[in-house]
Every structure is written in C-alpha cells, then in structure tokens.
Amino acid sequence: MGWKIFFSFVFILFAVSLLILYWFVPFKTIEFGIKSGGSNFSLNNESGNMQFYPNMRYPDARISYQIYNCPLQKEDNMERAFELISDTCILDFYPVNYDEEISVTCDSKNKMEEGLFIAGEGGPTNITKAGEFNVILHGSILLIRESKCERPNVAMHELLHALGFEHSSNPDNIMYPISNCGQIIGGDIPKLINELYLVPSYPDLSFENVSAVMHGRYLDVNMSIRNNGLKDSEMVKVIIYADEILVKEVDLDALKIGYGKIIMLGNVWVPKINVKELEFFINSSFKELEKNNNRIILEIRNS
Ligand SMILES: [Zn+2]
Picture 1 (cartoon, protein in one colour):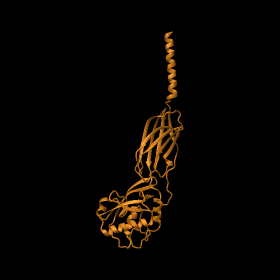
Picture 2 (cartoon, rainbow, N blue to C red):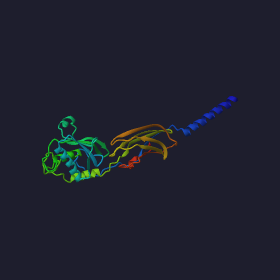
Picture 3 (cartoon, rainbow, N blue to C red):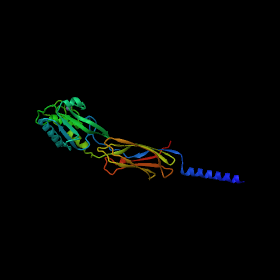
Picture 4 (tube, helix red, strand yellow):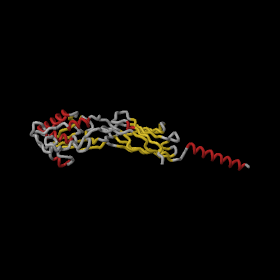
C-alpha cells in the first residue's frame, strides 16, 4: 500500500516536471531568414570610363598634400596645379607635414623603387572599395618632366591621374597621353568631380549578412557589418530585439572605411517563447550616408 502511493507520487511529479519542461523550455530548433532590410546608399551618376575604376574619390573634398625635395620651379608648378584644379571644381588642397593624402616627389629614383603607379607618373596608390565608391586613401605624383607651358600642364595632368582620372583620346584634352601647351581640362572632368564629392564624407554602417537560429529559448546569431561610407565610423551598439523585446546589446568597435566585422553570439537567453520576428539594429549617433540600412528584420523560415 505504501509503495503504491509512493510510486504514484513519483509518477505525478515526473509528469508535472515534463509539462513544466514542455512549457518553459521548448527544445524545438527554429531557423530565421531575412524578412526585410533597408536599401543601401546608391550613387546616381554616369562616370563612364573617365576613371581607372568607377567612382574614385578621396574621403573628403579637402585633400592634403606634401611636396618632397622638389626644385623650386617644379614645386611652384605643383602648387599652381593644385590651385588651378581647385578653381574648376569643389575640391580644395592644403599642405601638411605628415600623413598626407597626396605625396609629390621629383626624384626619378622613386619610380623604380615603388613601382606602384597605375599609369605614367601619377596615380592612386591605395584604393579601398566601400559601397559604390572606390575610395582613394593615398595618391602619388612623380614630377620628372619640366613643363614648358605657361600653365603647369604636366603637373595638372599628373594631379588628375592622382584623382583617379584615366587618359583621354582627345588630343586637345589635358589627359591626352602626349602633352602640349594648348590642352585644356574640359568640362566633363570638373563635372564628374563635383558629382562624386557632392556626397558628404560620412560613414555608412550596414548589415551584410545576418542569420539566426533559436534552440528553445536560446538564440544563436551570426552577423557581419561593414562600413561602406567615406569616413571611419565610431563605436556603436548593435541591439537585438525578439518581437520588440530587448534581448541583447553588443558593442561594435570603430570600423575604418571599407572594413567589416563578423559578430557571432551563442546561447543568448530570450525572455519569450514562440518568437516570430527578430530585429537587428545598429544604433549610431553620428550622421551616415544611409540610415535605412541600419535595421534588418528576420522572420521564421518555413522549411
Ligand atoms: Zn598620363
């Protein structure tokens, strides 16, 4: 008699604990797929094939330079070239003593040692792809030839190479491979420069990829975030919501132009069952090229 009661008590306890387990710790695995994400920033221009790569520009319309060991005449030519180009468009050039964006040298030795130039004696030497832009982080100009023209045509030609511009097939254009004093800049180069640099120098953080799986009440997340903007980003928080309930906040370090980061989270406890939607949000306090791509929503994938 005593044993019977004992066993039925154990059985009831077992059934109740199974029920508790069922209601509060479901072990079902649910996969989530992307429901919606904001559109990315896009440029609206026709760059044609004037540049080495599409949409080449420096991060900012104010570009720094330094001139190394040039004879006075060439240094003067180069400075006038910076002035003349900036007169035709929204660009502005300013001299610095270190960490310049455009380095100007006059020693032909440099050409042999570096061998980095895309074309001739001037060109971008460090390019990073970020979104639709090919961002020039550094350019070099080597002035060997002396300009015999009234205007410093050779220096202007090389500066335009450093700004990403290719040779022109028009003999009257300053970008024609063989220099003569009558060549002019023409309207299309300043027009393209103004279009490219009209876009402000902002970062642009966006989700590249997000995937999520729930095991019962635990969430596994894999996400990659990239800075497709024109400026290094600052530290931000990435926030995860499950059906609008805050689940997790993660710090994301500053990202350089074109750089990305993968964040993997395992076994994040979710204070809710039967989650239908997961929301991922990059909470930045700074201006970005596009804020719509800071949010992505995932929903249960029907398989
Ligand atoms: Zn050239």
